[in-house]
Length: 343
Length: 122
Image (tube, rainbow over all chains, first blue to last red; front, top):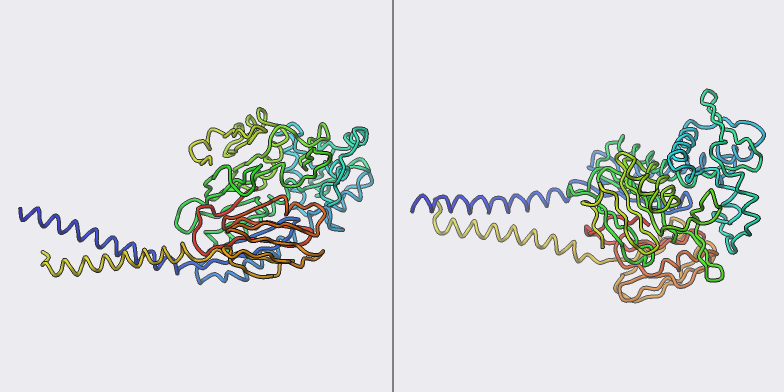
């Protein structure tokens, strides 16, 4: 009887001590890491960097430096910035190769890889088609005529891009051809910023370029970051939650940029083969180790549609995703099924 | 091992600790949700989410009208060509945003406490 009582008391003592321990730990943990966050409209989107660091790292200057890097990269890769690498390549199309920053070269090289992987559905030479539709210029109102599209389509072919690794140069062989890295550069820049922050010792944080997200480590509480996937037809609510740790996640949706004309909705993700907005799905979410992969694949899979898109996602290692089709049915890759919370 | 009084002291310490934990959690759970508005990367103002309000925000091209109602926020009018901010419609969860790129207006719901969802991907 006495022994039983002692066991009981030890048991109670352990419980009491652990409660006190947890309370103290919670209190200390809360004060340990400071949150720094900054948001700017840049890269034609809303760019947000949030980091959690201890007092050894100065958060504010670090976040500001991150944004300086974003601005510098935008100057190199946006086709709307005069004298950027992409602007120069487009200006010199059909004339001569242009020597570019190694980072631009890398992104274009990667874009060719994703072009191959998606049977040409991801195509960075899509700029003439985007211009025709008016996406990216803010002037879109009426869909172009079929004839106009037919005229422009032959200009869209990533296989014609000539890369010269020795001279770090890029050449578009025909004058009217033009590059647009919109479907991939954002992902690359998010990666660059995430890796810069990691190099500076940041272990917890997020880099978010308008929904192109790369997570550093975990949440402060050690759990994965929880990413809400916006419902494609009810944007106030979410269609699913995907937990991510040290990964990138990107969603492409037909509701992001579009215009209505005579009751029809025309969105900005164009099929390079038909010149029309891709019509089989509403949104595609891709989870990958880096954001350049997630960014380009989300566009590629969107254009490929459900069947071929799922096949592409399943074929790539460390890549998972979800496709929401026009009936709002959700198609989830095998590796994600146990993790995703469908709402 | 324990006398009855020791036991009481330990129990009260535990209850105190639980109380502190509970208090901390409540504090963070009820820290007010706010609507943060910025124009051209500059802070424009912060408004309580639970107080109905109509804001006439002066953007770079003109007025963006922001309506706060019943704990939700939307943009009802905007001096921009594409109206994407209006089509976004209502938001009500912390970390959700409405962005008007042409008028450089950002509306974001913020909260101090840890949310169920950290970030949204459109």
